Amino acid sequence: MRRKPVDHGDIAQRAEVVNTTFHDAYDGARAEASRQIPVLVVLGDDLILVRGGARSVTPCIPTLFHWTKAVAHAPVTVVAAHHRNRSPSLDEAASTTLTSLRASLSRLSASLEGGEVAATHGAVVENLSRIVGAITAQVESILASKRFDPESIGSFAGAVGPWLLRSTQDATTLQLRALHEAIPPILGTLDERDRAAMEVVVAGAHQARARNLPMQYFQKLFGEASGDERRVSYAENAQSVEDALAQVGTRRLDKEIARAFFRDERRLQRDILGDAAEEQQAVVAHAQEWLLRWKSLASARELSGQSLGHTIGEAFSLVRDRFADHLVRGELSYRGTLLAASSKAHRALRGDPRTCEQAAAVPKWPESSFAGRRLRRSTEGQHRVIVVPR
Image (cartoon, rainbow, N blue to C red; front, side, top):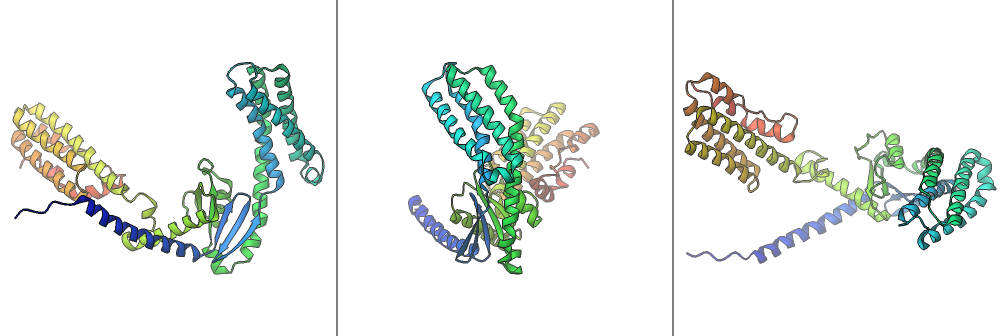
């Protein structure tokens, strides 16, 4: 009886229904997972504690930190304007940029010179004023001459560089001190159980992830190793508290699913297809090593072209299957290739101890890889026994 043609469009539609049902259930469970524990979100200048449906906001970045950051950006603005300018003569865009920068620095300098900040952070303000003075002089020189002098700009950058590093140290101290003063009152609102369960999400840009200051602070506070991300995590490009909470819910739910299905709570923190891909690549690489070894042995014993071609063809069929089939089928195919190839080698190499030793010295599985450990267990012993004549 003739079979009915498969309607691939109908299959895809049915699969999409299943996927939609999964996503609806997953999204609901993820939202619930994020509500089960207190979450502290570091977003912009604020520490936002989310507990159930309630939120409390604690500002944690002092004004002087922002002044320090702004002053550090100013000399880079001069260098960037120089690089953007297409000729030594000052173009209109660069002139507008530098004129605006000069006016902004003048207002900032006035703020730095007086008030409570200068009295309480004298050394920090003194360093900032030194940087502002150097930038102002450089900008005025460029605007007066209407030209960029590369040598002058290089000297300017070299002189300001050490002051910027000092300013970076000052900014770090200011932010750490502010965090350390803000955290105890926040933790004081939680009972012992909530403090032990609370997770922290640092929201920020991708490039700021490495050695991020709040990440380091909370990892130290909770005794968590860098990269562990059990209670302290980084939310790349998160723009809101909701974005950060979604990450917490995802991580908590994925851990539960991974424990249930794979007995490893961190299994879903890496690509679900990653382990199988590594296994299949290891099989392909090992098969290719065998292929080269068989060709060498065949050449040494002058095997016929037909026999060699058959052996090589079987090895290549294994490589092809690695990209078309699942791992289990691949392992069986690989064993079959080894058995077929070694049978021919056995007939060709009978009675020649030297060549038998070469055949026995086949590559081993890579001990360090996940795939190597798994595949070696499934085939270990066969590749050394089957090729040695009795």
